[in-house]
Length: 515
Image 1 (cartoon, one colour):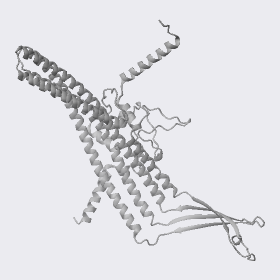
Image 2 (cartoon, rainbow, N blue to C red):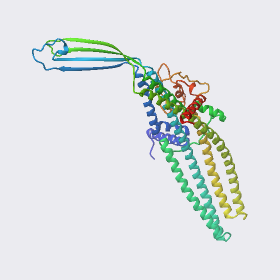
Image 3 (cartoon, rainbow, N blue to C red):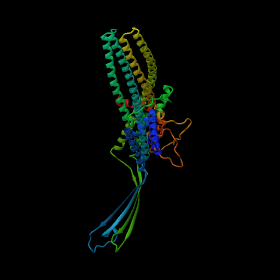
Image 4 (cartoon, one colour):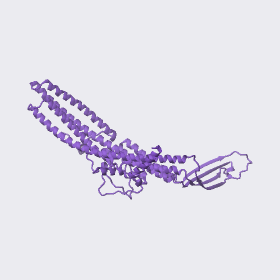
């Protein structure tokens, strides 16, 4: 027998520990928050939306650039063919010289255009962030459905396999009784038909497992392994009125519509500012030098000018453009009212769906218990000669349907909870974030919209002077407050105010239509 060395023992111990760790990882499985975090980090559709938000964020520095000095420089060298006796009194009259010029232009007064442009940019960024949050919540909800569908399909397949095994056992029992003359060929044919039906159902169950797994792979980025049971979602609103109030303040759909109204309102000011005066200061600094080294001459010119531009007549373009933006703002306000109604509808339906799915789940559990009890009774009564073969076969099919309906009721109940959380705009924090009780985060009154972190975006590196707070998990954070904080007038965009304004616009629309 070969004697093991310390190196061999160490290798075997390492292999054993690796196998144990792999088995432990498979035993633990993947949880729903893990799948959500992976989807937020790897989903290409969300990455595309994140890139679009980064592009929209650049609209703010573009708006500010108009108020900053505009500096440009140019240089040129000139050679002129002239006669030998042509006199040259200045550098520009020399046959060879070069010139360098530095030009600056600074806006002193722009008629409010810069201020309106920055307001418009902030509103556009808020809209983009809110739209991104809506896309992220939709992705999380799709991941939840795919996760629950994989579990449901697998459990339904196991129930189908169990039902097929029971029917095959029943077929063997019937076949034995047919040979002994206690049952007929009709009973045997019924049992065989149910067995083949169960095999066809098992094939369909395999297909459903593949479909659910591929949908999971498309959303999360990898095939589903061992999945942990989907936990119930904690922190949901206690009643419908509370849910509606939370949706008004946190729904990304409403936030995006509010941002669109703010952007349209700023666009009206931008269009009106084009008809106001503009005051700029221009400077020009030039340096001349001859190229001929035998007679070097240098000179410089500096100029300062103040330019006032007032549009006197533009053919009605400025006024028409302002009216156009006002009509766009009116349309955005109507869209906001419609969005509020849609959110109200979604929250109400989601709340009712949670209650209905919970009642269905409770009834399905009682149904499965009763079906299992009836199946055991049917088998014993069949052995006593009190039940026929078709009675046992029908009860087996009823038990299979009850179990499959129970798995689907569990899926519907857990998904309906996430749908309610998504309808009020709280799916991401309730699913991914665990903020300690009593901890408050400082929110700046006017945060920089270019620095607002998105769901699924990595944490920025903290400076040594101000370390970043540790949040669990760090894969994603629900950014619902920046979209609201970027709006300049939150009180003016509440639901009641916009509904009143919408009513006034409706009255104006009726007058325009002649009603």
